[in-house]
Each structure stands twice: as C-alpha cells, then as structure tokens.
Amino acid sequence: MTRTDRPASLTVYTDPVTGIRIALAVRRNAPAPTPVPWKRLRVDCLDAAVDGALRASRGLPAFACVLPGAERGDAKAALDRCLRRVELEGFAAGAEVTTAAVAA
Image (tube, rainbow, N blue to C red; front, side, top):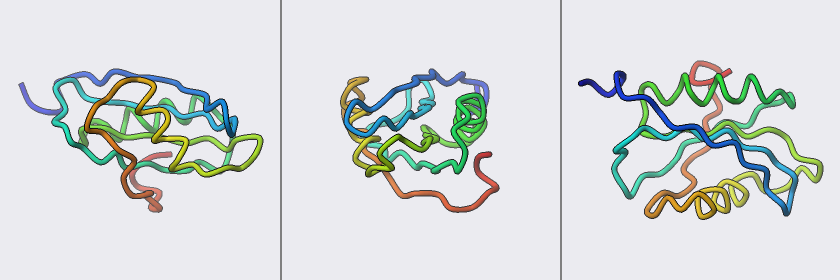
C-alpha cells in the first residue's frame, strides 16, 4: 500500500482563544515527530479548508488549513493547541506554506 492509498483522518478544530478554525488531515501511521505544514486561507470557507487539507495530505504525513478567526490571532499557536487537543504526541506546527499549489 502506498502513501497515497492510506486515507487521512480529518479533524475540524475551533480554537477557543482566537476563534480560528482549523481543518487538520493526518495520514494513518504518520511518523512522529512530524512538523505539520499549514496554509492560511483568506476566506472563511470550511469546505475549502477541508478539501485543501485532505488534498495536501495525499502527499504529506499531515497538513492543516487555517481559516481566519474573529480575533485574527496567532495561527501557529492555534495549530499547536489543536495538535495538543487531538493528542498527537510528537506533532508540532511546522512552516506556513505560502504557495497556492499545495492547498486551495
């Protein structure tokens, strides 16, 4: 079974501090420790975030799409709180992806 054959699990998280919503896709059996790359979306569209995270996770162990929050707070800190909440030991917020090719 190749990496792209293994489905990813999806978590949608709302950060209680900032109101930022995160769509997090993690491949089953993803190695830990793993930095989780992420992309900040300009629009508040949960469907786009879910689609983008799942699409990007086809080639990566994990990926997160971050939607704007009410406070426009620290997205990387919100992602770290998300990873702690879903109990992914060894996973941490990685670099922000700024290219459009990775996720919508």
